[in-house]
Image 1 (spheres, rainbow, N blue to C red):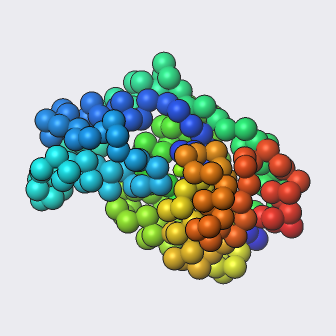
Image 2 (image 1 turned 90 degrees about the horizontal axis):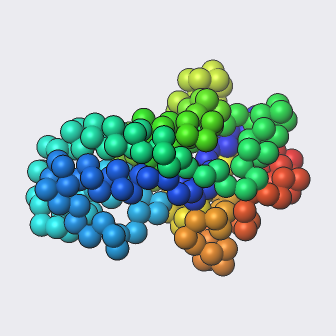
Length: 226
Ligand SMILES: [Mg+2]
């Protein structure tokens, strides 16, 4: 049995109102969103992004820690409201790949994402995918993405009452940081060039497989469960 762990933004979905919700919540709780317009969010955890923006704007890290719980409360409220008018967009091939992996009987699915858990479920819910991933490692579990695959694998062990050898685990993501967290955990990585990073860059950072998008169903199935 394979455990396939998907990233969310740039991998399963794109677009949506998360950045705007994040900015409003930061300004509400901390009085500044820092350099939010020029900041690179991709591949990072939500608490990492908040800390980078706020420390960059001159706040002490302890002040950031003290406000994070209220930040997430406001962010989730803003995100939920805004997703109704501006849902995420599912990326090409995603629905077919998820369906085929489920039907194969050879894989179970989870998430490894920098999104806080509730934000992940809201985003996926806006495209009808929230019930397809039974476990995950989330930005709300740890600020450092490299810790998230191990957390997801631990939850998979509980959920399916079996061990998953690292050779049975794939991480699918769109950034060098997804590849890095997979390599850190000793699992294989499939990088997809549907985010900000082109395929050559993803190849250069050591992804085991690189695809332009997830539409090549037969080839993806061969790679993941073949
Ligand atoms: Mg991503």
